[in-house]
Amino acid sequence: MKVVYLYSNLPSYRGDFFCELSKSLELDNNSLIVLHGIYEGGKVVKQVEGDVNYEKYSFPVNKRKFVLPMEIMEGCFNRFKEINPDALVISYQSANVSMLRIVLYCLIKGIPYATWRCGYNGYDNHSSFFSKIREKMIKFVEKHAKYNIAYGSYYKGILEKKGISPSNIIIAQNTINIEKIIEENRDYGVKVFDENIIRILFVGAIVKKKYIETSILAVKKLIETGYKVSFDIVGGGEPLDDLKKLVEKENLGDYVQFAGPQYGENLKYYWRNSHVFLAAGIGGLAINEAMAYGLPIISTNADGTICDLIDGNGFFMDKFGDVELQYECLERFIKTTKEEKMQMSQCSLEIIKTKASQKNMVEKHKFVCDCLRNKN
Image (cartoon, rainbow, N blue to C red; front, top):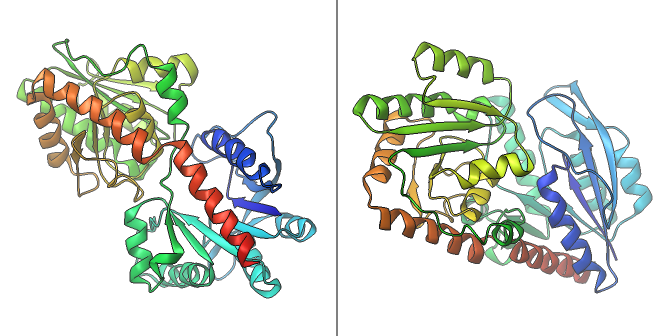
């Protein structure tokens, strides 16, 4: 059996997952093939590089303007037809014409497929004509899928409201290789909070909808209140210059540091030397990584994935980019005792190990692939 995974791009954090899934599929004489796009420009996301244990093909993504702004993965559809797979798992994006074309081809040819999505709608005006058309396209693809793989319970609830049977929804969580991180970090383990200063951390691609400027203003309010804090911002992206100007304007240069994109040992330094992770907007997997390093979490539901991961290990925020709410949560964290902070750290490690391990994610995807084979 040949299973194709269709993805808009292949970020490096997916590398370990696809390698482990390929190994699992091979045990039953199944093969994994990954088709993915290549974007130029945009946010800073490192792609999978080097040798892998599965077939993968990349396609340039070209933006076109039809009735709606659309994207085409040049050559992807023809490659899919050549492969003639037995099943498809698609991380569907409504703006990508190639993906819709492949879904329609599967329906015509009787190739069973599953979707794999977080359920987050990133469009600003959800009532606009374009947004409504996109939602109808997404619903069509989800309705005709044999299974829908949800990142978490948030998306599962959305699918059920659309009338999709719970028996056709699989929660696989969305994660990275947290087992590897925990193993590499075993000599550090639970955080120790002996310092007078609280070190706040953000890591990720910097885009507007992460509302980092509001986090900076919340940190400013903490400083004005008299709390000893610092804020490290690790990542790159277009809004970075404006954020630096904001820090300069607010005279926060001694408290807010911009590290730029960091990888490897340089990035580990920030994970290991911070006390709490703050996420004011969209995102997701950086929070999994933070938890694997034992960091307490203050976060929104991000891209619809985090509500399952905050339970005694920090504070959940029900609004994006709310300065006052971030300030209140950070103040609550600062005021907790050292023992309570260490308990939050331990809780982060336990939750991520039990709810969002890579092993769990591979097993759930393997289950769906096996079910698709039986549907064929």
